[in-house]
Amino acid sequence: MNALSLLLKRKNSRRKFRDKVHLHESTDLKKRFLLLIGVIALHSLAMVFFEDLDWWQAFWLTMTSASTTGYGDISAATFWGQFSTILLIYGMGITLLAQIASDYVELRLTKKEMRVKGVMRWNEMQNHILIINTPKYDSERYLGLLVSQITQTPELADAPIQILTTAFPEGLPLELRSQGVVHHTGDALSDGMLLAAGADKAKYIIVLSADAQDNLSDSLTFDILHRIQALQPSAFIMAEAINDSNRPRFKSAGANAVIRPVRAYPEMLVRSLMAPGTEQVLEDLFRHQGDHTIRLNIQLANVTWAKVVTTLIQKDIGTALGYIQENGDVVTHPQTHAVINATGLIVLINDDQVIPSLDEIGKLF
Image 1: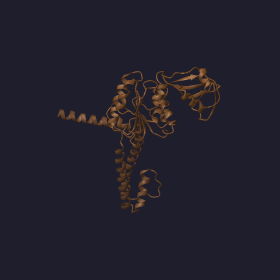
Image 2 (image 1 turned 30 degrees about the vertical axis):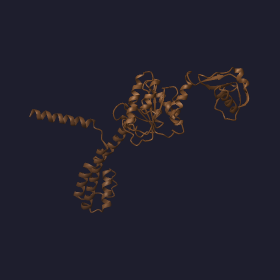
Image 3 (image 1 turned 60 degrees about the horizontal axis):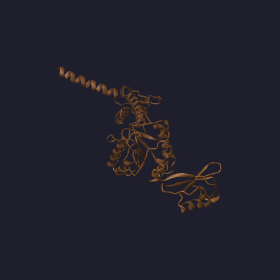
């Protein structure tokens, strides 16, 4: 007896706890709605038989009574008609209608909160840009710059953006949400999280380094790439690598492009999405080894840009990228036949380039 009482007590306690924390699901809302329809049908039927009303008048009386509108144009006059109204409408219908309204509002608010906090799946999203991870430091600012650059790129302007991260459990910053960016709260290394973020339906996948100062991030990125490949996605995949020696490993794991984490210039990442291989050129420009830029302080007057470019290439001096105007402004990639007046040139050269003196270069023009 004591064991049975203990068991019933546990069940009652568990049921009581469940009732306190249970959030009304859409299925519960449907059940109440169907029950309300049944009550309306029974009351309408009662009005037809007890009050001698036609079906429309019976339905009209039922609805005005259930909604507590009470126009008074039609009312129940017989005992059984009034009793049916008290039992079905006052006793059940109005209560059900109030519960349905309450549950509907609660469900809408709950779903909205879950979306904001990144708990719900965005199942309808496809051909989107999926950003995995967020930078450890100043992530809000970086994501703002990255999203801004994406939206300013014509080819990506209308692409939906989703972020898979654990960084914003209470919701994305308003700046990102106002641009239509959504997120799913979770770790890409947890089972099912990549599918929850629609990695198998994305058009572009960007795997950011969780910590650009920690080489361990490359190992995590490598694991994420393997998990993505298991989904057999058709997306273009870009990954950040801290250690250059990991680039071949990342590409063998499915990355179409690999770039260093450059937090100040998200433009580099976006350019590489649109023109794979650009990341290598841009990265080389940031270091002295390999291809790099120099400034040649020479005076040029009334020379076409085409002549400047072809002359430097023919003399194996380098590739002209732009020139400096007399007021100090830099003009990059002007029109081919533009006539320029310059106080200097910006030239791309490589390590083996032998640069003549400025006087010798000036005499070429």
